[in-house]
Length: 331
Image (cartoon, rainbow, N blue to C red; front, side, top):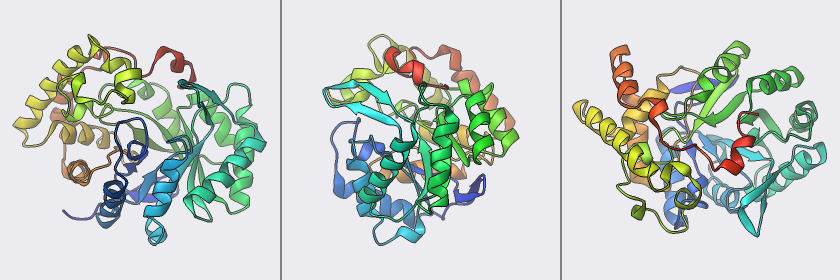
């Protein structure tokens, strides 16, 4: 496998595909730190530069794992982490959101310490705080840039109007949001706004939390404590079976082209523009290499149309988050 080409997120140059590290520590069942660290090292060897984590993954344990993995390879990494989601230790489905200036500074210092680095390359607000003006939050993030603690700033799951207001305070380098064949809401307003302002787009869950990779045949394939099984409507009984039928259609189309369904789904995301850098997550080297091979899959206009025909976004069963969390999206 050749090393990756690069793409640009605003003024930031990164490998054409990043690595989401969340599942190495949280939400997706059993963890394996040695294999996770080996996966990060293999990603760097293959030209991945953008590593994505957040303070709430674990919470806190994923930042420590990533920091440990890159301790002697910091110069090869564009390190992204996030703040704003505050978990309730007594209820995994309950969470608060903070974007007030004191918290922004506090959270950044804590992340720097856990990561064992002196700066964060790309610092995102994980969710927009409805009780704090975005101007205050981004103003505090701009202070972090001025202090040398952060190089670039981003937003996650922000709406178009919020992105504009934020960008007026300090240049936004990237907007991270869910974008895949079956999560396409951002195409109406968020994507055009980012392109107008020169902001890169970082799709998370580009494989539909693994479903579009064709790795699950039933919910029994998921551990009992897997977030997808307990908190993801698209994996709920009834919805799962309907969505599996969509995946089977994608699998058949992929087989005709000599690729896996996951590679075809990733190639579709990558085809959306040179300013798009997806961050599929995995904690295993074999899936990392399968995902990275998708960078070399070129789709024609006819291929794109065929993919979208077998995976129509409106056919997907279930919302992408539990109802209690939908209000914090695209805010």
